[in-house]
Length: 178
Image 1 (cartoon, rainbow, N blue to C red):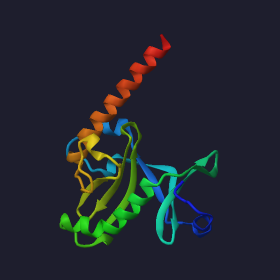
Image 2: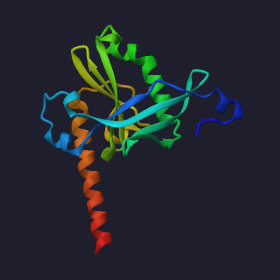
Image 3: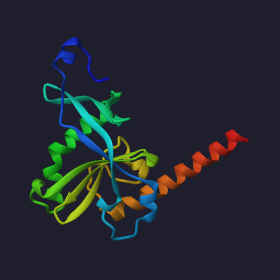
Image 4: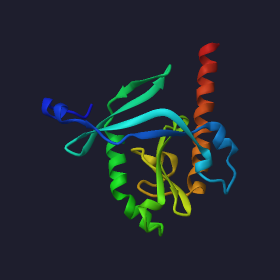
C-alpha cells in the first residue's frame, strides 16, 4: 500500500484531501462545443486523502459518505497520490505555458470519468478551463500526458471511450444472460 516499514507507518500523516467530481455519461452526451468543463462536473460525497511520509505522497485513503456516516472506502494506490502531488508542484509552470501568470487565479478539482477509466485535474478560472490527464497512460484515450487540454481536445475522446465501454459492457451482459 505504499508504506514499507513500521517507521513509515508511524510517520504517515493525512495530506490535504481532494473532493471527487465526476463527469457522467449523460453530461458527456449533452455536451455541445463551447460548453464549459465546469458545467460537466458533478460533485460527489467521496474524498481522496493522500497519505504522506516526510512530505511525500506514498499512498491514499478514499473516504465516502455511506448512510449518513463518513467511512474509509478504500486504502492503497501509489500512482494517483504521487501524480496529484507532482501536478500541484508543477501547476505554476503548466499554467505559465497557457499564459496564466497566477495559480491563485484558478481552482483545481479532481475529476473521474468512471466509464472511461479516466482521472483528471480540472483547472478552472483564469479566463479558461482545462483538463489535465492524471492516468498512467493517457495515450489510450488519445491524450497527451502532462498537458493542459481544452474541452474540445478532451470531450470528444471521452465521449467515444464512454460509448464504446458502455456498448462492450452491454454486449457482455447480453451474452451472460442468454
